[in-house]
Amino acid sequence: QVQLVESGGGLAQAGGSLRLSCAASGITFRVVAMGWYRQAPGKQRELVATVSAGGSADYADSVKGRFTISRDNAKNTVYLQMNSLKPEDTAVYYCNKGSTISGSYISHNYWGQGTQVTVSS
Image 1 (cartoon, rainbow, N blue to C red):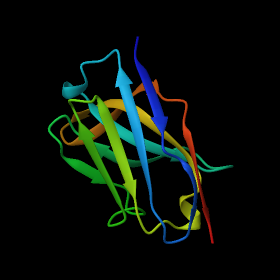
Image 2: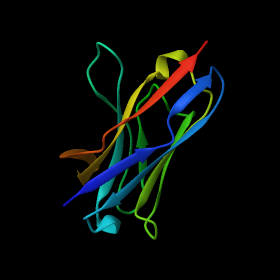
Image 3: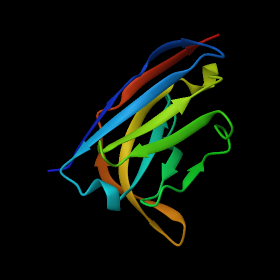
Image 4: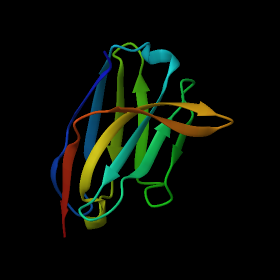
């Protein structure tokens, strides 16, 4: 079965950095797109960044220039490097398996357990 396990969350100060990892199993990782979502308290889950099977990345406007998504197909792992963190980045971050159709990311209903990121001002 599909398993996605996130790690790397924690507490950071504003302006700091964190790197999230998501290890995938039960899938042919190299042929799937992957995404990172986040959900802050009282808010809907939002798409943060995606990477296609071919390595093309896309970002929400709120994180462009600060976050970088990457993948290591040899390790079945997708990463989210988060720099210049802001208090509004505080959320639970979730890894997702998906696909891309005509350049758009389509989320599949496979999620990790989430990892908490808290940014203090």
